[in-house]
Amino acid sequence: MTTHDKNTTSLTEQPAWKALEQHYKTIGTIHLRSLFADDPQRAERFSAEFDDIYLDYSKNRITAETLKLLINLAEECHLRDRIDAMFRGDKINITENRSVLHTALRAPRDAKIMVDGVNVVPEVHNVLDKMTAFADQVRNGEWLGFTQKPIRNVVNIGIGGSDLGPVMAYEALKHYSKRDMTFRFVSNVDGTDFTEAVHDLDAAETLFIVSSKTFTTIETMTNAHSARAWLIKSLGDEQAVSRHFVAVSTNTKEVEKFGIDTANMFGFWDWVGGRYSMDSAIGLSNMIAIGPHNFKLMLEGFLAMDEHFRSVPLGKNLPVIMGLLSIWYNNFFNAQTVAILPYDQYLKRFPAYLQQLTMESNGKRITLDGQVVNYQTSPIYWGEPGTNGQHSFYQLIHQGTKLIPCDFIGFAQTLNPAGVHHDMLMANFFAQTEALAFGKTREQVQAEGTADWLVPHRVFEGNIPTNTLLVKRLTPKTLGMLIALYEHIVFTQGVIWRVDSFDQWGVELGKILAKKISPELESETEPELKHDSSTNTLIRRYRKMKNK
Ligand code: F6P
Image 1 (cartoon, rainbow, N blue to C red):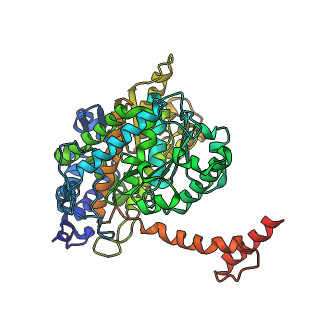
Image 2: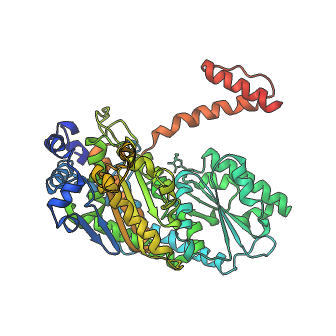
Image 3: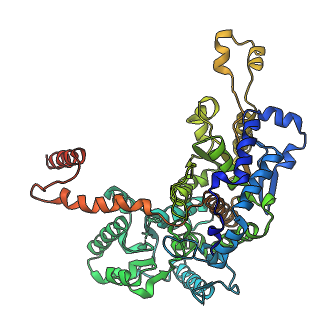
């Protein structure tokens, strides 16, 4: 019996779920103002700390009872067993019959993790060693291009997990990167993406990393072929490809077919999901940018959070607490979205990265035993760095009609000390969670002498829940910890919702239809169209418009 079979009762029939429904009736309308007024210890009671990360979750609409019931739910859902099953390498990705072992990517050299009777840790370290040697060669100018020039530009070509992780981490760790090199990331099949990425680059100094787990993804392959053509045209010789292209993939055959020497291929494995792969060879561009030492520190951050997740009691466990709180709002308050609000410009792509991690993982409607869920699964994740968001969509969070729980992420130390900037940024960071929680009452607005008719417009209801993640400093290690934190939040959610967080069948249909439509757009003669009337008309209209 696998651990997910243990839950024979539907989630909404479980005692802890029922208890939470009852509990919601008493707490749903209580204001954070009274929760804070009633308990001077609240900030201490509802906070947790690990290494350089401090989590304040006291500005959530919870009591000690809520937390107890949420933890009961996690226990009834066998969260601890499921965590162990993942770390052990059980095939918990049941629809693809695969282990889920992104945690093995950061396991120490002497660890032992078995998949189908083989210890995968030595393979992981072989690839890391190969990446290290290559990254050093490129960084030191020893890897020469076809015309004997050193590499100055690195272009990663990939999409989804083969792009979002690398681009997010590059931006996040730019401070630590080799500034005399240029890094670009091409993902969209829109030719503009590739054209703009290379328009000012010298092909003789450019290295392309084609990153694709499957090496069959149409967007990536189209961009990779355009890159190949651009390089050959610029350097005038097909032989140039071997010095300017490397591959990151699990698919040796397709890499060979493309014409990349498999000696220049960096492998990973089917037990690493695309959106969980940025700390595998998919992070090669990052390793070149920040250097192998910093990359190793990032892996140590991941590992530290893994150990925390698998060993710390549920009530003090950061990913568990945050995962359960997201369920509290998603399933009991019917909140539909979560805002991710990093107060650090370097984390500008973090919300986009989390969108794939969270929504491709838990945007599911079928349970592990094949039933349609009768409850909500993943909320919509979105966000922008502070303070820009404050001058854009925060209005809706403060005074709109939707409840939007927010994660605020900020750093105590800035990487760019510049006068008052950092304290000002952080003043906004603290001010926003305070304003969201406590709002401004009618009485307070009146006391300011506001005209009666204007009073309602200036009232802030407050009671908007936030988590505050206050981190000492943005470093490779704390970035690794933050990413692993969210990976494990997603895992916790998936266990409660009983979905397979590691497949992504929902991306298939669009891909198949696009393949069918492509020749219909390209055909010289009028194609016979057999779609619905809307799609047929749009295709005809497009063909006419593009030829004019
Ligand atoms: O969007 C579907 C998906 O399979 C993602 O899960 C994955 O990260 C992305 O496509 C890219 O896949 P690949 O690395 O195989 O090119």
